Length: 337
Ligand SMILES: [Zn+2]
Image 1: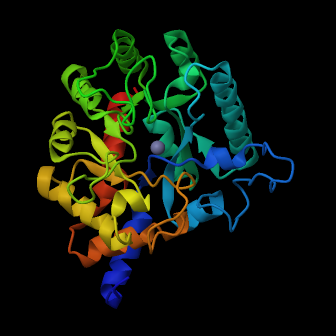
Image 2: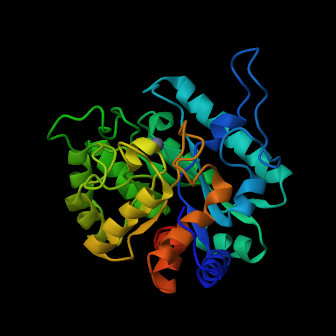
Image 3: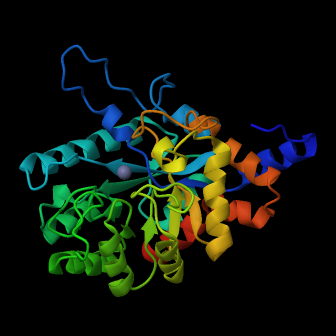
């Protein structure tokens, strides 16, 4: 990290404290689940500061994170019934953590996110990453909405009954009819549509058929770091045309092929701002879903380093607040009616 002047440091810390900071993706629930192997270490608890992993409540508070999305990810299980069972167990673990921790609220709407933030509590959003637990059944989509899921991606890297993921893509594949139906049902229910992990051609199909904004909760720029999980400039423009937002992913392989640092992550933000302006970029750390982290972003407590780097590069206050969370909040307000 390059040193800031005292005035810059003060400005960065003030901005970070005053902004509503939103992170749209982490895999922390996986680390809270009872371990499968008998000799594995006990699961972490969100209320206790751990030296394992990246996110717990003390580290979120230290990092000034106001709204954290927690993903339900069940792995490559396709239509296996245990994907549903695992997802329901993850909802249970998540709800118990919210009940046991005064500082954490399961937020169901934009207003509940703002209310939690006013009370100095972390608003926790529940998402599904990869639609395997739905088993191709829109009834289960409605049930998960009742359970408080407010963000969903139709695939992880593989194929689901709805669409193709980035590792399963046929060059011209599109959403299935059921995938389009799911998209309409998500619009009706007020679930944020997440295109991270979707194949390029399915992304194009979403951009064609989707009304209103969609997000890429944890994807970077392919022009800055060539990886299929990152978005091309054309995809970024299509997302921006819809009023969408993409959350910057800290996975080193998506940040830089040689050496991932907080500075290189902010290069992705620069690229998006140059391409489509400051209204379409946010943060989607992928913490606890990644094995290593960029230098300067070792866990959630290090989030202010992004603000420091934006200040150092001369971003105006308004743009910094947008990147830290206001852009995603705009989409949440529009979608989670
Ligand atoms: Zn992911």
